[in-house]
Image 1 (cartoon, rainbow, N blue to C red):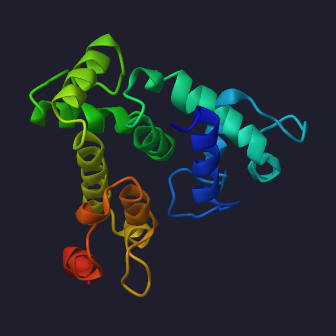
Image 2 (tube, one colour; image 1 turned 180 degrees about the vertical axis):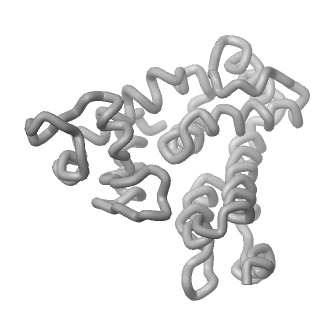
Amino acid sequence: MQSVEAIARDIVAREGGFVNDPDDPGGATRHGVTIHTLRRLGLDLDRDGDVDAEDVRRLSVDQAVRIYCEEYFRKPGLDRLPARLQPTVFDMYVNAGAEAVRLLQRLLAEFGEPVAVDGVLGPRTAAATAAAWAKAPAHLADAYGIARRNYYYALADRRPASRKYARRRDGGKGGWITRAEHFISDRFRLTEAEHRARVAAWG
């Protein structure tokens, strides 16, 4: 299995460089690390007394990897998950914070292991995940990826400004969808026709 650092570097590669999209609530972002994260961590990289977009621009790949490993993997306790489930939950945590854990917690009920949906990966959620994994080791990671894909579609249903992340200009799968499906077995990925049918109501 990949190391945490290797998974983090894969995430950085998917996230790309500096972006400051007004439709993205995360604000200025580089390598997927938002300005809000830098401010929370107090990372004034240009040492000018504040944390702003210029500090985001200066963020290196290695710094982003360290932030991911510490803030989005170790602190939330993702190491408590089965190793094969860690990459997709880690990637989702980078993208959506504690919603990654809430998504898992809601899914666990479908596997007969209900827990509180509180976004905290504590001992009960870890134990329930281990039990669900033991029941269906071939299915839980796929089920999580499918739930994640559905989460993105539903978010875009509610927020038209976010639809560009789920659907490209040419109508194909947007970054959110391809990102979720990266962790899903081929047989569970939507065809282009299925994707276009799913987003047809967006106009």
